Length: 342
Image (cartoon, rainbow, N blue to C red; front, side):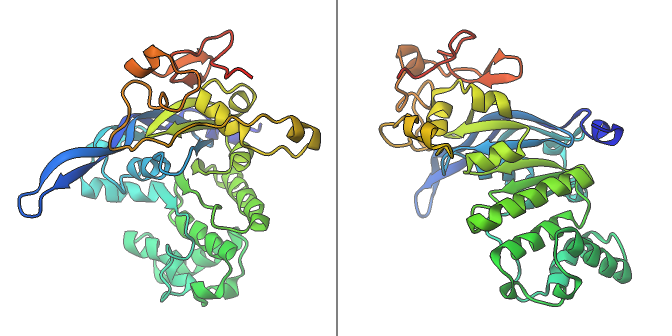
């Protein structure tokens, strides 16, 4: 690791503490009243060091995307703290957040819906620079051309429109737009899930190349565990709005401690035919509970094959079982974790 890379990785860039995002459930047509809440994100805490990538995985509806949006304040958090580069975002007013936007950007899942079909590629990429007034017209033209080259597109693409591109090319346009203000932190919200399998690896390699060149810090949200393993330094596993396990990539994939993480890992096909033949699937029973009515105690207790009374009665706090390896499970310990028996 050279001195520049070492400098990029010093210190924590993003710190999230007890983040919650609850959506109210209202009843009544004239005099509406709140009768409950959908707990989309419920007490999430995490840290990301400069230049690192934190992967976030979990089933659909577990709160991954809402977490990313709440961190960037695209959705206002219900409570909790979010600090970027030492600046507490939850304490900023609308103007303060506007001034912070160049430092934090987001890349969305749908590469077509997130682009204005009536705008040219040049106008799409330049739009953040126009909004924030960072440079003049000539400077913006040069910046757009540089960004197109940076993401692997040609300068003659600048005058074309989104419908003229493939899904992978449109995602590269989204990446260029996100980088136009030179951000430090980028939330990647399932940026490859809508792409062909043959294109996914190319886009992930582009993310890594840009990280190395620009010192970017990512929150990478995905379903594909193999891609998360490839790109991440650390991985957070979410279930029903909570982070149930958080660890370094190698530690998590070698020794998952939470029963839910073990079930997720068991669903990953193995490229080695012998290993695939011996792979034991952990089939979870029942359905994911509603975030409007989560179960008491551990949120995974209704589907966990190891659940005992304490799991149903008490909400487990996230504990550091091994150095840097946290899990929210009553049954996890240093000797055997919380292994589901064969």
